[in-house]
Amino acid sequence: MSHILAIDQGTTSSRAIAFDARMTPVAQAQREFDQIYPQSGWVEHDPEAIWETTLATARKVAKEVGTGSIAAIGITNQRETTLIWDRETGTPIHNAIVWQDRRTSDICASLRAEGFEDVVRGRSGLLLDPYFSGTKVKWLLDHVEGARAAAEAGRLAFGTVDTYLIWRLTEGRVHATDATNAARTMLYDIHRGEWDAEICDRLGVPMSLLPEVRDCDGDFGTTTLLGGEIAIRGVAGDQQAATIGQACFAPGMMKSTYGTGCFALLNTGAEAVTSQNRLLTTIAYQMDGQTTYALEGSIFVAGAVVQWLRDGLGIIGKASESGGMARKADPGQELILVPAFTGLGAPYWDAEARGAVFGITRNSGPYEFARAALESVGFQTRDLMEAMWADAGRGEGVLRVDGGMSASDYTMQFVADITGAPVDRPKVVETTALGAAWLAGQAVGFYAGAEGFAATWAVETRFTPRMDAATCEARYGRWKDAVARTLSR
Image (cartoon, rainbow, N blue to C red; front, side):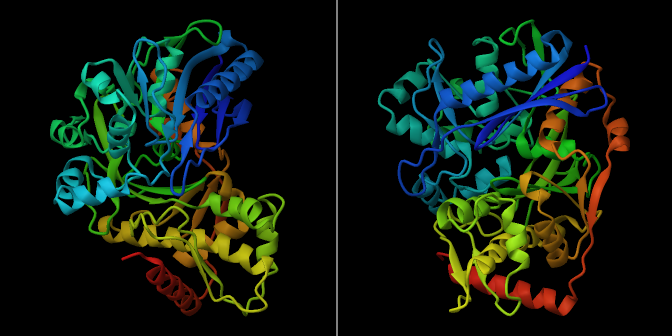
């Protein structure tokens, strides 16, 4: 046994990566799949596309390194995305409703008006927002013909993407999730470590629909679909897996992942800190029955803003061009882009906000739009970090970054400038997959424990702040003003 296989099922693609005994990626495969937009604010995935791309990439990598060399499988996944399927046939009753989807805004508003958000927040650590799985489950049961009756009869199963993949990989033998994914459903009491009967009842979600919750390094069964029999021994939602992959094991350590969205987590240790700034209280990881908590801030649009430059405006041919264009922008222009394409996440949580650009002049062009797009990510990151530091203290004060957009030197330097905090990009940038691989590897004795892992973590580039304080505060003030003009309430 000389490899761990990590399955990284994301919002726009599925990937598989094999890591060797030194936690170095040695083989990988990736396949994109279509995004489905039935109407404004709705986002769906074809469950079969999720499964087929996952299986194909896993098989390709397993074949490359040799199935017999794989000691275990770790799974990490896009969180909150919701699927319900028939237990007998395995057939999903509807497309997966993606985490970005906003169709349940009215359900959330109604529950909020009834005063139910305090219950949800107190137990799940989350806010009443369409982002999370709970109201998506309610919508499916209410809108798919026959679904509620079938669910109440125990014929249906719910899962986030990890659960669906485990079900498929084990050919229906295991219906389980891990604590980090359960914590993102809005149905799970993160303090008691169990599904919450009152919240489920209020949303009309039968408890029989829900998977068993296990530790992140628990036993999730075995699969024979890649060749030989391989154990599935590590599972974590993508942002928690990245936190682990960044070796953020000590309270006060913080990471931010820049993918389609941007997600920052601050380790708060054994204490579940209740935010006073509309951040989320969540589970960072759970091993050996011990829960470590985190504060999380979620930005809905990060890398997606570069996709918009490419696919929406057509001003770049590929994402890597954006940094060079931003550097050519006229420094005298102050375009501010608020990328609220599907609402605003933390700390605003405004599902109805929509994007806007401020400061356009006759001379504003592609370079200025590129700069505004990249800098919007830095401004949103400062929003998150200020809220986290207010709730839990500044801690280490260093931000560890990963995800596709972290490769942009321009963007990472601006994050350091506008936040005033050093930004560390690691040598191994595949931190989400690495986190899943480490969970599985240490569970089977292939990798060292947390202390040994942390000792091997290394920085590739540190971006240090270099913007003067007056300029920084003036620019951030313009951002705050722009956001205030964008909010729906």
